[in-house]
Amino acid sequence: MQASGGPIAIASAPRFRRLHLDTVGSTNINAFEAARGGDAGDLWITASMQEQGRGRRGRAWVSERGNLYASLLLIDPGPREKLGELPMVCAVALADAVEAATGSHGLVRLKWPNDLLVDDAKISGILLESETLGDGRCAVVCGFGVNCAHHPDPENYRATDLTELGFLIPPDHLFDRLASAMRARLAQWSKGAGFGAIRESWIARAARLGEHVTIRLGDTTYEGIFRTIDEDGRLVLTQGDGSERRISAGDLFFPTAKKISAERANT
Image 1 (cartoon, rainbow, N blue to C red):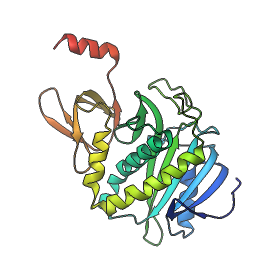
Image 2: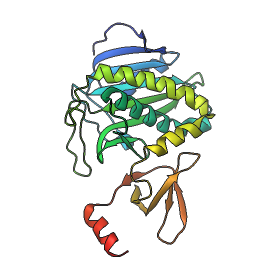
Image 3: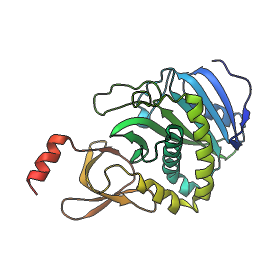
């Protein structure tokens, strides 16, 4: 693992410092190591390549050179009961950054809870993890992976990258926009006091709002109409019997074209 020197301040976001590494196992792992070593937080760890990149629920994240891999270490960023709002803060900030870098307002849609889509194809993922340190501080690591030049070819969903979409965006250029957007959205969130504004921004970019979706959590499956997200960031689902269910975790799936046609034929 090679570092490009010690952490340096980011001009566009002076609250933050950045440590860039060439190759790491995972930027999230390095961020937690910094926290356990006593780092005060507001530290970005970025890498050119990850050898053990991870997504939500322990899934592998393909991490070739040419994409953006970045993790932000926050120490005691807000009341612990408010930390569940941070994934949406990160998702809105990353959407801001991608649209600023590409100059394309309205390009991105947000898939609950925190994936970014372009034309229903995944372009990035976000992984938040937290840990109570030995001294009682709470370390939160916000990990971002963005497909700038490459994307995987998974079996169960579509993926894309910025180059395929016609945008030649170097990872460092996108990172500068992300650091600035995270500084602005964290200030807006204001340790949870401003989540209402974050929620409104998230809903404005929500993918498949008002449409039929499926949510899976382990062996449990829920289906219904995606109505909104509530004040706690939970997905509000209207089920077939008219009942309302609020879901705090799970994987969201969109219906296939075949299923959509069948549903329309039955209405």
